Amino acid sequence: MDLFSDLPDPDRAEVNVSCSSVTSTTNNNTHQTEQDRLHEQVVPSTESNKKTPEERKRKLECAIARKEDASTDKKAMKLEHGIHKLKGHMKEMKGEREEMQDAHVIIDDMTSQFDSLPSSISRIAYYAVFDGHGGARASTFAASKLHSHIIQKFPKTDVTSLDKEVKRCLIDSFKLTDEQFLKEASAQKPIWKDGSTAICILVVDSALYIANLGDSKALLCRYNEDSKVDHFLPLSRDHSPTQYEERIRIQKAGGKVTDGRIMGILEVSRSIGDGRFKHCGVTCIPDVKKCLLTDKDKFLLLACDGLWKGFTIEGALEFINNILKTDDTGDNKTENIDAKLEVACSRLAAEAIRRGSSDNVTVMLVSITT
Image (tube, one colour):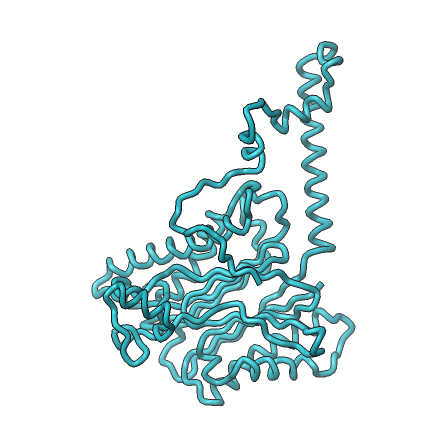
């Protein structure tokens, strides 16, 4: 897993640079544009004087169209043969709380929502769970806005480093979502005190980009060839004020950690919203990680902390796998897996509450098939 340790400070302003722009500035020679190269292929210099401008233009347009068709065909082949199929399932239960303060988003394929994308990208998917506290407004706001900001800020052309641009896109989207919610919250009377954790996975072809705030978790079930068993690969890191780095940031900002909580109140050190704690070091900047899917991967699990009050990570994996191991009743393996994961979501959430979790519980499982 790439933890992005070499990426620049997200606050540093940089401009997306397309591959063609990089090429054009590598030396002082004049470089041909893509259209110029196509023009030479269609109308060689020895023939250019024999064709009318209209004929040359028509041939150039045909060449460009053929190139675009070829690019589309390559993307279709890539989708068919090299991209893992994903399907999200979820279950939420209120527990003993007065209201459901969690929110979620499942978009198995949101590629069509982008006006343009780098030529190497064939599919984008998005999965997120938001665990609200102090009310449901921050989680609901984040669920409605965050992915829209990601779509707006995602690179639209080929770039020198897609990883860096995706990380910047995610961080900027979190910051904008937080800024907009705080602006709306502060305009209310009384001011909204809501906050929310966030765990989201942006899937770009077969690369997972994971961004999280707070204590909701993302895990990837992967088969281990050496041990011959499944195991959970952690994709996120909890943010608690009891952690050394988090506590130091809070204390430098003038905040205090009492009984494991910021100012004795807030349990998480990073969140969307929580305007009254921003001056205490609470930040909306997420951790961002990357993980490449393999043929050994089976499913993703995203869940709020309500689940983990009733399950250990190992216990959750065993519980889900026991459901997946039940006899198949049909010929379509993918449909059977999805049906079982749907059942697993409901049973897992219900079992967490039965085991004593009084919190809201949101469980999301995403099947991974080839």
